[in-house]
Image (cartoon, rainbow over all chains, first blue to last red; front, side, top):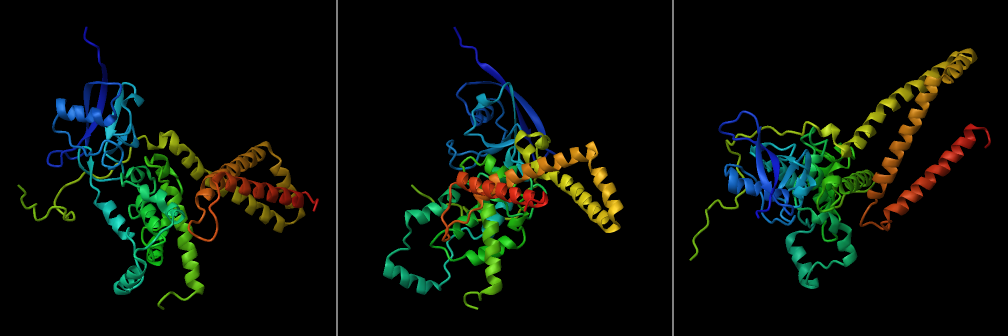
Length: 255
Length: 145
């Protein structure tokens, strides 16, 4: 006797830049299994029903950060979200606040520009040759477990951009650097090997300033890796103010 | 077995002619249960604005003389004013708890000379200080100190 499968209605945003003026919604009625994640349903539609759907995905284990989408209006990783969390209908849309390239695929260039802006790498203040002398003497830039613990939480970001889709400030102030980029910039500011705090704090106070954040805390609510970007943003605010105040009374290094 | 990769493989994205649909936000964003707390947080600004006008009115009455002051005091005992003051108190408590309970524990500086305290401990210290200050000011306003 054949097992009856549960049917589910899946509404997916469709947008073909060569044909459509604006995105539209297409509905699919598909058989689903209890153990499916939302990504399985999208892949089923892509494989068995409509191969023209475009979406991003890769690791299927909440590590690569590719498959972030709006599920019934909430930004979530589709590979991590059980389909059983939804009843008979689920609406799948591309991440909010991003331009739509095609169907469920968004344009990430805006984020990449902001990401580069905060210098998400270790900055050394000394000239490279002098730096190498230090390295040759010590062998490496050592770091204690306590020093690592200071920033480790913020380094767990997978750039899934759910925080940008949830942030009400980004929706209104596109120049705002935004949660993930600030969290990663702040991560390097807290790194004991880094010496670029003054540069980054100046960036945090500049265009797209961290002070645009109104602490909605939405970014931390939706973060699938518990990075707590809202904490990073608000620590960055405090650090930027302290750095600015220090600059008023203390001479800058090298000045 | 291998062959050269495309010369532009892994190159940074170029600005091209690809047409994109403009960014969108969900039509029901304001109805999401999660964001209602934030909207309420913002809406308390209206209450503070109105409370500010009441304070300005009090200052104005103080400058006009004892009769004007007595009249304003009488007006403030109206049930609508009392309801408004209750709403202001609720707003202050709501914003205070959100700010000191959620924001402050997260904002502790990291990597400095001070230890990072447990969020519950920070909340407890802040609420204790808040209660102590409220008590002191209440006693001052009541003329007990």
